[in-house]
Length: 199
Image (tube, rainbow, N blue to C red; front, top):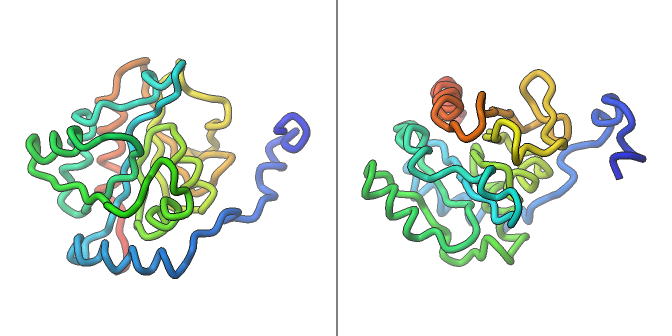
């Protein structure tokens, strides 16, 4: 489709965002739950893994590499990662004492509508290259996308002025060399430290 619908950079500026909408009643209900959990702090949804059978390993970030981000005191974090990630979330609590909220009633793999509302209820999204990134971008949610250097980095994440040309609400951060997450995650932490949110 991009071959026919996106022949130059100006074509990317024509869509109106968001072009997906969450269920506002469901989102507001979730937002109330998250406010109780966060006690007034900004809520950041986080996802770190891709299950792409060919390139998922390149795109997935080991959860321990995200500790510098998850350790930020100004945020509380919500799980947006589909799949069985209970042991990884426990590892965060054991490693740095941070509790990642899980919405028990939402199937993040099969319940697309509720996942959209959970994303909509967050103040910020941090994600690797996976379905969460596309859904957050389509919802026009402020998002930080962490990408590999080359292998696993797809053409549609091309950026201009640090933002995705496909989804202008996505701020893109990329590895400087393949397989090295520490530097780029340090950059993400510094960026997040400077963010402010009206509560």
